[in-house]
Length: 162
Image (cartoon, rainbow, N blue to C red; front, side, top):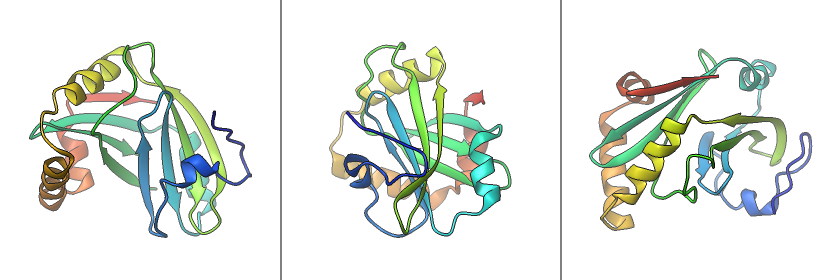
């Protein structure tokens, strides 16, 4: 079990996913899913953005599922998904964690629930991945070289507003 507390250090199990000191997002596809948004020198505006309205999008490109996260003018992220532990649409919980990259301190926590449609797409499309992790990584690299996060957001066929 993972313990998460606001204004405390990130649980070591999740901390393993933050391997560098670069700004970025890492999606841990356990059940529940964890969305680690790790930034350096987080501003008050960035802290507030986590708790305001934002949009998650879903797009499938070249058999690679992507989730996009649009927090308006504050930041946007995309994340590819190779596999997911959820096996039914009832496993729809996602926990957003805003983590100060330099200290690994959790500054904001937000629980959300993805729609049944989102979970169905994630389960279906990750199950249909029939190539190696190396091929997956190669395809992701090609896609991310071709499209910016904002272009991926514009391509999303499924959107959910929070």
